[in-house]
Amino acid sequence: MATAVIEHAEISDKKVIGGHGCCKKGPGYATPIEAMSGPKESLIYVTCVYSGTGREKPDYLATVDVDPSSPSYSKVIHRMPVPHLGDELHHSGWNSCSSCHGDPSADRRFLVLPSLLSGRIYVVDTQKDPRAPSLHKVVQPEEIVQKTGLAYPHTSHCLASGDIMVSCLGDKDGNAEGNGFLLLDSEFNVKGRWEKPGHSPLFGYDFWYQPRHKTMISSSWGAPSAFTKGFNPQHVSDGLYGRHLYVYSWPGGELKQTLDLGNTGMIPLEIRFLHDPSRDTGYVGCALTSNMVRFFKNPDDSWSHEVAISVQTLKVKNWILPEMPGLITDFLISLDDRYLYFVNWLHGDVRQYSIEDPKNPVLKGQVWVGGLIKKGSPVVAEDEEGKEWQSDVPEVQGKPLRGGPQMIQLSLDGKRLYVTNSLFSSWDRQFYPELMEKGSHMLQIDVDTEKGGLTINPNFFVDFESEPEGPSLAHEMRYPGGDCTSDIWI
Image (cartoon, rainbow, N blue to C red; front, top):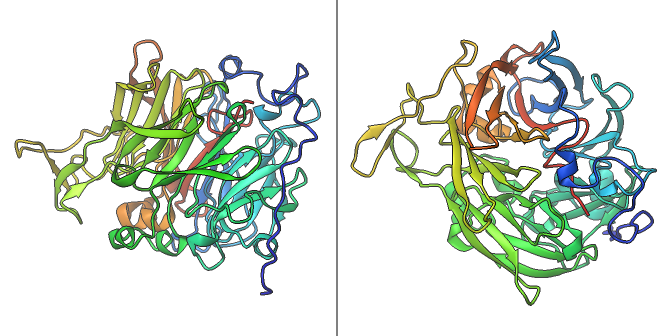
């Protein structure tokens, strides 16, 4: 392959009107609170993976019916396979969202599907037939690498300009030093790298921008050469995993500050600002140390951080280590900024916290939906007095729950939480080998938004064990009209 010619690009400004949109209506909603009154979800798109399972089948985008009045409720009603093998579909984003609400020419039509392993980016048309999306375009990894040097694409966010930005976790050889941010234009052509030359982070993963504070902050998983092989604790000691947040000027792309989260912030993954665009605080879920870290702006415009929630590491028997972290792998914030939800993939619980005081979250709900310490598992936990215990995990529709809660998605009104259980194929194989044989499932949890509380909905269960091409791994979920992890307000 030819030597990469690194191209840098700037975000277009042709559609940003006064920095805050305008009164004309584009996609999404004018405010997060207005979005809460949007239509109830009836469909949800789910990325489903065969890569790494031993099944030589292409990954696909599943359409799941989530309308309780529909005869096909709680069923996969369509599957759109991608044309290649070995992609590892993972996260997804839109070509246009509420950040473009002030642009009447913008249209939320295309779902952007970066492939974490192959580096391809699929663009899917959801407008022709929302129940049966179709492939629109493929951005090939050779072009991305040739123009930018970037590979391992992960998070995709639409911008108010009409551009799309994608975080990439390394170079084509899996080195973290090659990571950075890819810019695509509105026709999904490669524009170049977003960050200024010399301003790439040490590690890449997720990002979120808050334009009124002229800031974007990104997080750090690890080197693809390490995490693609499964999790090896030695790789942490070897410096192949991250513990930093990177504060950038927005939309300029200059790295202004690096926040070292230290030993309390190992492997910071999903990152979210509060939805209210005037707010200058947010959270990041630190997987390995199982802390929710709050970041916030200081009076001098610098940024600081503090641990807001800590999940106690469990003493365990019959596991690979004597202690087990919760492993916070996903979290989200309700559109009214009242509640924060996160999962402990290894422990097996989903939690709800009130964050009306962002500095002092209060646990309001907890439900066990899997994990390594459930009753019947060889792994047992010990309390402080040495007493052994295991979690009670119910069956749903007669099916034992397998794996641990991983990706979550919340309804616009905040009353329904959807949960899948695949993290990444090589990690699934390592920690939950049963998923290789039986595949994923998807749950719905009813949320009490008044007093707090979480309850499994017994009428909803999507079992990916029974897929036509064999059991598959289900990951991220998106509604056709946007949601609290895809849409950003300006």
